[in-house]
Image 1 (cartoon, helix red, strand yellow):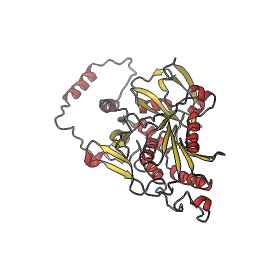
Image 2 (cartoon, rainbow, N blue to C red):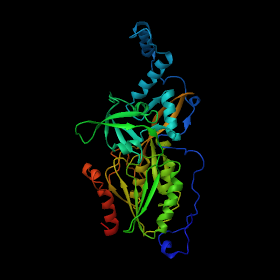
Image 3 (cartoon, helix red, strand yellow):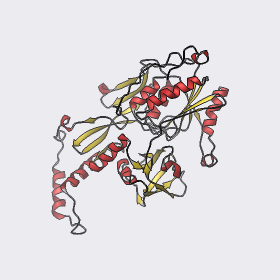
Image 4 (cartoon, one colour):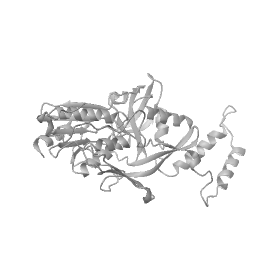
Length: 407
């Protein structure tokens, strides 16, 4: 879609014709948040780190083999399962919920999520303060319809405690055949725990919705930073230009993130070329990488922009919100974001198993760590349980008031 440069009602807002070719084609993005390219096992030494004595491990294994009495003669654990267990324990010893070993079944689950062809309940989960937490239920999915909310703590899945569980292990429990039930024991706002029963279904991830309000505010709801988001966002920006208004709300509430390249691409509509969007901060400073705007930069200074965030806004959502705020483009309204500011990379261990390892952390353009408490909005507005019950949206109302009244 093009914007007619002769339409004066539209031209004052857009500083250039939308003729830019978006940087994605067929297939998935490289450089995803938590979904970076695989690194072959042959690039890593098979020898233990210098100075590490593995004798206690071998001795312990031998003692177990010679002395362990199974519960029944039918119980059988193969040597491969022992190896997987050792690697899982090693990964867990780093104390990072995002650094995990993916044995064959869990690796396949992870890859199916990347492809988007999975059956489940439709929510993003993570470990926060050592508790399994709902980052966000995705709009229109079984979890969303059942009433699961961002910030809910999942105490049990089908009656089995989640204490000490990894995100990958939880996903394995939650996934299942379409039409089958799964029961979550939920703790919300430190009240009495309660159960929510959800029927699994085929998950179709939403991406973008737009709304041109009668009060002159244009609302662009972005639900996922998936591979389709750049083109859909481009179309939405064209709709905004055609609406003839200078007031835009980008709603990132409940958006658990997605691909890094998509966050950079979307930020590029608002920032000049070369402006920092986010920095990958590695333990080795020489590896640090700054991701910069591609300079689509189609808006004039007359644009009035609010970005809505909440505790369900994570990862790529936090990158976009942080960049637009720190460059003076947007005012943030809502709740403090989730704080998923780490970068994971996949390393192949065997042909059917992998390690997912945190290799860096995200920093905003001004050097603030996203992992350190998330992104705090400029205007904090609480969304209460009563608001949800009454179908009220005080966060959106406050954003609209800010754009219309200027405060």
